[in-house]
Image (cartoon, rainbow, N blue to C red; front, side):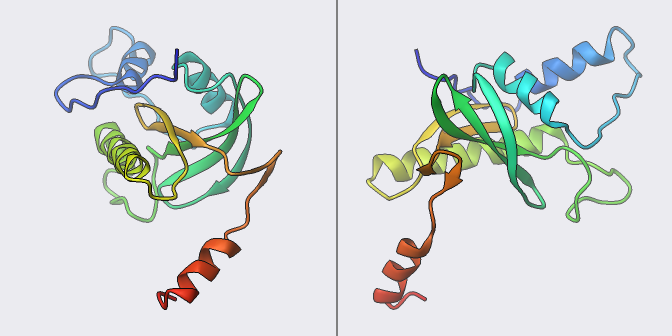
Length: 161
């Protein structure tokens, strides 16, 4: 059995929304604090959602998502976690992205990766997606990511760069 791919339906609560409901408890008006997600929380979510068997460390962080080196059994994979907390792109009033918006971004990226992969485009193989998390094949050797030099040289040869 492969990694799960959660079907995106904006009318239904995602796995992440269900997790937030559990944290909120039976109190309807209770707010759940949105804060910087820790490596341990990412690890717990990835294992619980069946996306990885372990998350080793954070490799990179951008304004919308963080990239983690994760494992599926003995195979290294990439886990991308879209942020739900404040970034330079959020309003000061709200302070965070709605989980549905980040889930929609993760779903869109997964769909684009899947379509490109099926069309033969050289992209990391998409593996699974649940909520604001998606996994893909790790391109590299052990814990070191592959260099992008080859792809850049190809684009220079084609006159794109």
